[in-house]
Every structure is written in structure tokens, then in C-alpha cells.
Image (cartoon, rainbow, N blue to C red; front, side, top):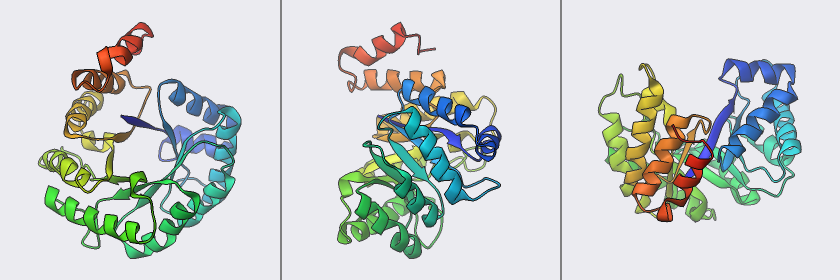
Length: 265
């Protein structure tokens, strides 16, 4: 399963401060540690900063590319201009992912052409103009509309990842079940699935335990990728154990390697 490292996100106070101070050492270390822990992509979010997001994301990508050759980057922003700036700032030979579009036509019109032009992977939120979905069927309905739309406009749907939008179970107890039910429905379209893992545990104590248990259930349901903290051993242990149990990790080779390297709890 694909891990997308979440640690360079300006909603985190220390990251926000590092971006504002242009602390290259901090950002480089955050990027390097996630790749070493097994992250396939580094999510970069500079949306919540005191300066210009366009300038900040350009700077952050320059730092990461200087630290990690051919870094795979997930550009995470609600601002299509920042996404466009990040695409221009990326000069490595790795892979790019954009986070995200939804069923909102204005967002599709601004971001989809960038994804097609730069041949990026693309995260699509499984929601439409009606707002956040509640049931698995509503998630599937929104995903199907988006799938047909982006395919018509020339996007390679093999690079499409749908986020069925997990919500905090502390306030919406049925949402984990509906999320899990939606995964095989959406995958039947021919697309992949992804989630922002930590949303499920918001407001609860011992969030790491909830996140790890939910990840195990989501992997069994067919989840392909997750935005998570690759340095959290609860999470990575759950991931590697799930893959071994499901036969994805042939002869448990990755599990054994992770144990030998001290990466399991």
C-alpha cells in the first residue's frame, strides 16, 4: 500500500513556523525521515502560512528536491495557483500527485488541465455539489460522476485516487462503516482509493490506536493509499502486518525486514 507522508503540513504549528522562518534544515529533515520510513510520496501543504503560499510552496519544494533526488511529491492545496506554482517549481524526475479535486465544476476546470498537462496522479474527493456524503452509495455516486468527467477530458484514470472522506467517529459513529463499504464500490469503477487517515480519530484519546485499527480494516476492504505519519510505528506496524496477513507481502518478507530494522512496535 502506498504511504503518503503527512508531516510537512502547515496546519502543524512547528511546520508553519519553519516555513515562515525558512528553516531549510527542519523541512529537509522532515522529508528525509519520511522517505527513510517508507513513504512513497511526501505531501507538501503550505496553505496555512503568514506569507505567500505560492512563494512558500516554491521554497519548500526547492528544499526537498535539494535533499532528496527524484523526490515524489503530493502537492496539497485548495489554491490552484499554488498548485500551478508547485508544478513549475518541480524539476526532479520523480512522480507528482495533486491533492485534490472534487465534483465542484470550478475546481475541475482549474486543476484537471494541470493534472493532464503534467501527467500527475490525482486525488479526487468523493463528493459533489450536494456536499459531504453520508452513505457509501452517495460516495459511489459522486465518484462515478467525477470518474466519467475526468476520463472524458483526457485524464489517465489509472492515476486517479478517490478519497471517500472518512469523518470523525467521535461525532459521527456510522461514518467508518460507510467509508469501508464505499471502497469496493468505488474500486469497481477501475480507480484507486486513498484516505486522510487521522481524520477518523479526531476528538478521541489514544488516537494512534484508533488510526491503526481503522487502517487495518481499510486495507482489508481494498484501500490503496493513505495520507499518514510514516514515523508512527503503530501505523506502520498495522500496515505491514495487514499486508502480511492478506498475502500481499509474499512470505512476509517486508514484515520480517521491518522487524529486523526495529520498525515494528
